[in-house]
Amino acid sequence: MEYKTHIRVDRLNVFFGPDQILKDINLVIPDKKITVIIGPSGCGKTTLLKSFNRLIDAVDGVRFSGSIFVDDEDILEPKSELTHIRKKMGLLMQKPYPLPMSIYANVAYGPRIHGTRDKRELDRIVETYLRKASLWDEVKDRLHAPATQLSLGQQQRLCLARGLAVEPEIILGDEPTSALDPRSSQRIEQTFLELKNDYTIVVVTHILRQARRLADYIVFLYLGELVEHGPAQKMFEHPEKEMTREYMQGLIS
Image (cartoon, rainbow, N blue to C red; front, side):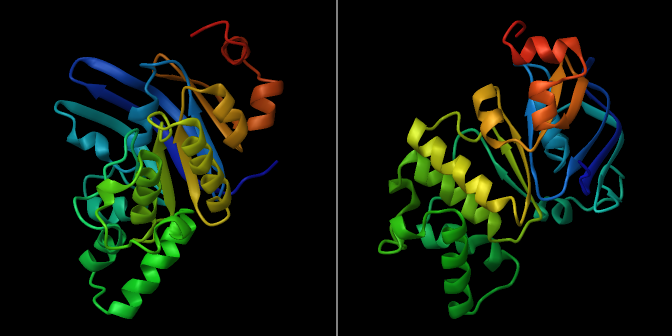
């Protein structure tokens, strides 16, 4: 199966101080598919994910080499503009962090920062992206209530809506359901499946069952190295590497 490439990683190496976290990573992330990065704890999954929007820059002592091409732009070039890069990518963290303001203001925050002032346009944006995040029907009658009054699962979907409102191309999720109850996790997964027609989605998880439910494409990391990557069905049923097969069967962790 041929995929159109959205992100291409060429010989990526990342160091935190003296420690090498990622070692010569070469891979592609397909466009408008769900790519799931798997591997045991400490193998570099989150570091790889945060390389895509340059959040690794915030780590003291970080050094990196290689290239990451997004829409043919090497975002690791020193001249790359970080605000421009991050606007292309929404990020869901493990725990939701709604802004200390209303539900409405959370979603309108990004568009306002980028210059949207018209009330009717902001109303349209808020409704559009709350619908995309499968939250509108639950909050439409209390848009001006504090976002912190929402449940954790609702807060995570609100954070997703807030990220979508700045019209990114890519959604990044760093174990985005790990703090949620099973029902809320299911809602986030279903929302991802609906959104992949319009966005490239990259998710880190340590839960293989979740990877099976979500993934079109799998990236398997182990101790900072890329073991194998490819279409999900092939990776789960006929992996090329013995280590991949053993990990999928729960024989190594």
